[in-house]
Length: 225
Image 1: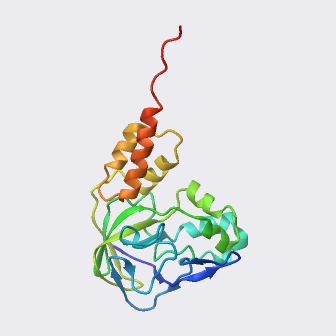
Image 2: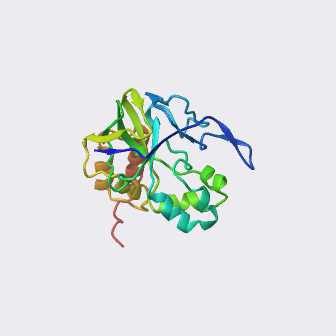
Image 3: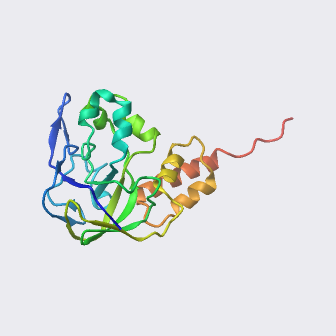
């Protein structure tokens, strides 16, 4: 059993210089917040195609990654603090190598399940003025992850965070992310990842499409005549 280190929520603001709406700017909560199937009360997302909704209701980011980001992007180090990548939760004891798809956690009085990695986007680059930051995050598998909400409840900023179930102990977020980046991942590897309980339908479809393409394009060459 451990505790979360920070709880963050926020509304829609404008990301300069393009004037794009975004929900990446969060503020630290100082009191308990209600967690519903769609996420924390008071937390909103600008583009629901890629953030938010029942399958991506809560975004968790490992606080330990901020030191690596600050070292790689020193000009932005003062701004690289927990909550600044748009996450709802920060922790000190969990990261992508320690968390598996389908993991069930007690979060305050709620129960959440790990559903997929977070895919870093261009808005991170714009917020920090660092064109290569989202690529750095992706290449080093320090992406963060999403939860779906299994049981609604209330969460406080330093609440209990406890692993309840682990249905896919071999399918870490790191393993899944590396397979998604691989040029030609093994078919068997993709099949195992697709079968992981709790993986979002979108990721299942993406991995299945990759597998099917590889199967169609990996037939052995015919005999030389």
